[in-house]
Image (cartoon, rainbow, N blue to C red; front, side, top):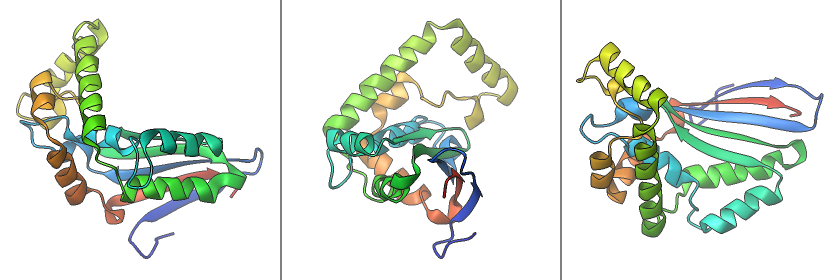
Length: 189
């Protein structure tokens, strides 16, 4: 089905268990970043679950837990994904939270600093992980240093440190739209 806002919805009804799993895929991700400031898509995705306009991060987490649901946001090379699952009876309420996460992000400076610090720690951990080092070097060899696909989705310590909250807001405003999104849903609908 194609919704009035341009978003495409694909679904399968499955009533074996009273659960619903869904995924919203927004095209773009790392491919839409500036090659010299890699890490914006990842930071933006991580900030999406750090509260909304009307909920602090703790209130949002509690609202999700009260529904027996899970909602996670990830950035990839080609897209940003919002992945969730919930009890079938709480599907509408869970989707209302997803809508709030997508349309009314909090953009809290304190949370942004925490997410940046966490991302820098992840980058440092990867530098000590042989598999991550091999993957990063493999991408560099395959795509070449001038291709965004050769860069680590997390960015570098320097690029992450240079990213501001305004960079995230600009990326969000420019690239998050229902016209470049699709939803996959399966369960007891």
